[in-house]
Length: 283
Length: 279
Image (cartoon, rainbow over the protein chains, first blue to last red):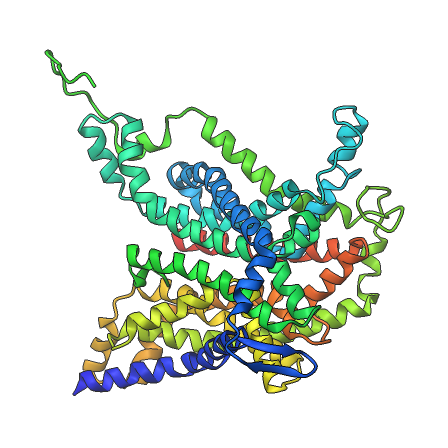
């Protein structure tokens, strides 16, 4: 009796939020799925014709940008992992009583808005700005060296902006690690190196996976960094989608591209969920 | 590894805490300091160029120190309007999404019910969806329904992308709690509602507050989803973006500086509270 009442309470509690997400997340997704099979123009209206060629055409016309986004995503994930693993390790193991202070310091720069942070990189990397200008005046760099509007600038911005998404899950995994296991390894005569490779690294793996997912997803779909720091040679899939919706008003093509992006990412999520369980997904 | 140890002597091993705080030399610590410096580099630039009096249209070369930009900041009507709208949206979306999300988080930790794991997955999908897809799908819906874009649509968009983050943040707090406490209170005659307010709420409110702060910041910061659903409404991130097209005026840097200072206040407050709890 009590059980049944409690179950009803649970459904009552989740109802408002879930209903909101159904109407404003699930329904738009389904609307977009339907739009991706439609034909027509913005002025005369789109009509559902089951035109699956939207997908093949959109892919064929934008394959460069799609591959570029995936490659950028992989590079950003790899680079943030390499940069932030030692950092997270140091805070978790050497931070001592000041662990939380270091963690907050790591997060502090990211309180400033995403756009302003990215624009700061534009100010730093400007052709004659404080970094390049100073080095050029000192004769250390050739005068025509340019970083802005190249893929280095875009990757630099992406790596900077998404670093905390990698560092935090890594830190959480390392911090949770049972130190007794390291003692046990060392009691059983493992070297520090072996203990790291056989105990620390495998146990940090959930953090690595979570961090990779949290970094890869937004960086593949990002269009701000490429828009502000890049050029037409660094166009990413997000920019193409934005253009289709806001400039050429070709909703079907934009929708098809969105679903190509979504499916690639959801595939990764489901593989992750199968490996670690759905409970891990929302913490 | 040489295991053949004839005269085996059990060596004295340091305690784990000791062992973990030494070793590896200073390299790892030095590395951490360098990365921290890298993370703060843009902040230094943001602050510095807020005091610049740019020679030309672009605020990229430091020309002359001035306080003029600060003095004239609030005379910028585009900025103040955008800021006002963004603060309104952030406040409302925080209240609504924290309410929805906290209820879901409580249900997920407190009760076992059918559909629980599907719900976990359903809540994760919005977080796994690239922002641009969330933005354009809502836009497509509003266009299909012939729904004009403005503050309401922005608010809907912000609540939508915030709910899952609230659930995650509050759940991080509730999952460590002993939920039998509420049962105990009810066995002792408390009503479900009074046991919630007297037992559960005092334990979870820090998590709810953290979620609220996170959502408020995310809402103020969001450019991508907002840009698709704003119509012609002035919003703070849209103002930054527009300003960046005309050479990043110092006002952008000043806003960055001020928001960074709020972050500093938050960090200091957190650390002080922690210290008080310890002592």
